[in-house]
Image (cartoon, rainbow, N blue to C red; front, side, top):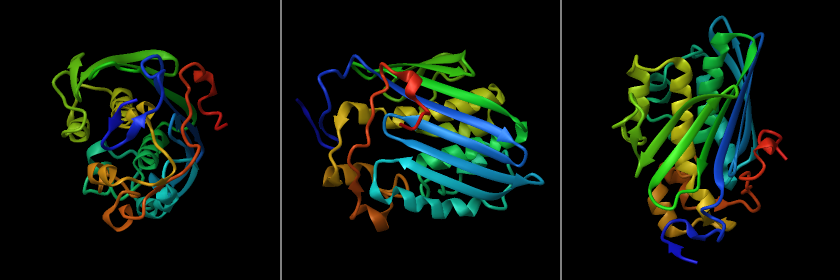
Length: 257
């Protein structure tokens, strides 16, 4: 198997036959939103309490997560208490605070905050990315079981469809989503989810052994999130038995097995 300077060795000769999948379920109740996320590398839940249009409490649950330090990201989430629900992407993720949090738990908090405006009811997002043999991805996105849109992405640049075409997923994408009037709120939320699924897709490709994170990976990802912050990265350690393969069993997602 081939080496990669950041992520180690190829995980399996089956890579190229599977699918990266993420599911996010948002359940609204009076004064509360229960948000759940699961993919091959993460399983997280969050309960957001709100009153009079503002967040009053957040209860995160790190069920399955890659690094030992990840659970400490519950602390910076507390800064959201007192803020209004339903903020746009640019406001919520701005000021560098996304990097001070767990990327995926912070996303879940944003989605829960926006769902609070919808009141009771449930929403389910599904993103699926077949393993790619080159830099081209074809990404299927659904909401509540219905096709929402499909993206073609090459080396981070969205090729189609409009209005996404010509946008890079990791260069000003969140800011654009916070400003555009070319998309509805459902498409905006789904597009943010897609960005993070593309970010974690390589974890299906590479074996990520438990123990200290390698020097090359530290250089590649330093400052990206709470666990990779400068004050923690030198002690970053990966947990054992984290990855799951849902390629052939998407029905098991959000069961937190």
